[in-house]
Length: 104
Image (cartoon, rainbow, N blue to C red; front, top):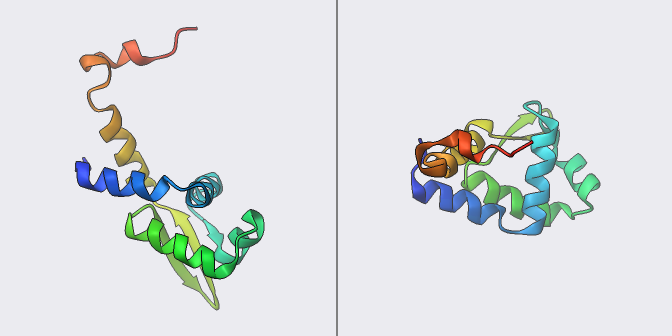
């Protein structure tokens, strides 16, 4: 289970429109991730700006980068994402999580 300080750091990193967009795109792409250049192109963000945002997301543990040849691929860290969601919903609805499910 994540500690509150880790969750605050992750939520703070996501509390910026460009970083949230990057993260959502990487979550959509799945574990294989996406080359940094492709992210820049897709979101119309300059490489220097993108590098700054990747650094913030990486320090929060939300993304991981890997070098493949001359390209860097970034992927969402799903363990951290799931840990954050688990932390936020740990005591959902006073211990009765079934009460939190949407009514049909």
